[in-house]
Length: 330
Ligand SMILES: NC(=O)c1ccc[n+]([C@@H]2O[C@H](COP(=O)([O-])OP(=O)(O)OC[C@H]3O[C@@H](n4cnc5c(N)ncnc54)[C@H](O)[C@@H]3O)[C@@H](O)[C@H]2O)c1
Image (tube, rainbow, N blue to C red):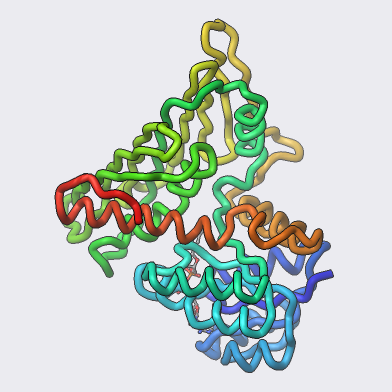
């Protein structure tokens, strides 16, 4: 059993802690927040000691795994310090998205994991679902043929106005990760964006993408649409077939080219994904499984390196928006 700590006890850190508490591969041993009342409340809820300083917790408990569920500017500025502390303390880290709001710091975080030979995962929970696994299986079986295009979209409501690029940097790590998962590295990006009435930030955007393997793609996303209906869709097409994955786990359909019969998986009532929290449960369990099995750090699914790659694409998109040009990802 892996001894696990959680740093950052907001709603998401609490969700991580709850899931570790229930997972047979983990033993939750401590929680930490610089806000005393948050750390204390979580400690009481989960029956583990509270800490108000990450370094003190890491020194006292020497956990095997640490979740970093801090947040900060653009939902990512606070991840850097505790992530480096956890790697220095010899822990495997599962970090929240975005990996960081600054590329140079994200590079340091990935480099530190590599230097220490530790596993680094990012909570890219949107693709750790039975439907997404099935889509990947169809792809691996050659049912899509030669890949041609990808269309991805995701929209929710988030009224946060803290940064002009908040929506791009905080929402789209998920979508870019899903696109990279199916279609590989992205080479170039062109971004257009708009602001919903009353908004000051780029709250809705669309991106054109060129992948290194020749695939072409488009992505649309928004922080302007209230929930109530489907909110995410990924369509990947090749010479032999096309799949449409809807709402991460709800449904995936394969449309074989030149065939009038489609193949469809729908989330089952018994044994299916119950709610959004289950995507975290699946993702966290996969990380625990891989660490337990001794999977080499470079083979971790949804890794820190993937988190960095997604953020570089988004940085290129921001540059594209600012310069009104196509930008190559560096
Ligand atoms: N994967 C997903 O689907 C998903 C969904 C929503 C949010 N998120 C991500 O989860 C993260 C957390 O979100 P939240 O809403 O819980 O944030 P939050 O701001 O409510 O909570 C973060 C907590 O971290 C604490 N903190 C900051 N620096 C710290 C440090 N060095 N040591 C200890 N505690 C520290 C803060 O005091 C705060 O209580 C964000 O990065 C967000 O982008 C992911």
